[in-house]
Image 1 (cartoon, rainbow, N blue to C red):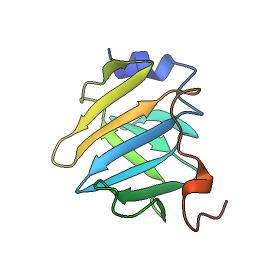
Image 2: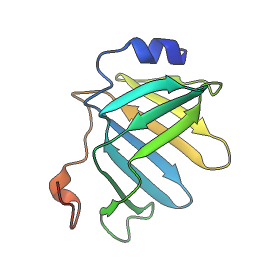
Image 3: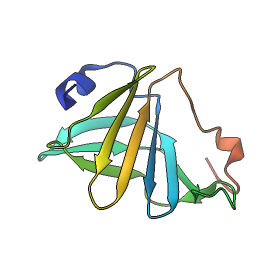
Length: 112
């Protein structure tokens, strides 16, 4: 699988992106994604985070875009999901439209 394959898919926008970094899980809906200056850029209308140990619930997070180098290989992990590594940070999973989603009602204090 390549990023070109992923960029051609019509089930990514409307899905979710979830990243695991530095002891936290970050998640939000994908409103757009594109190749930009050698990076794959994901945009979300909102994002939430919680500790990986789930010791607290989802809270709003103010960073709503993320990037990964287009040189990082995406991997098909089944059910339409795509996983990629973020060297030095962790990993992320793209959940396609119609797959697993974070319900915004479960994000304490989220204002849409």
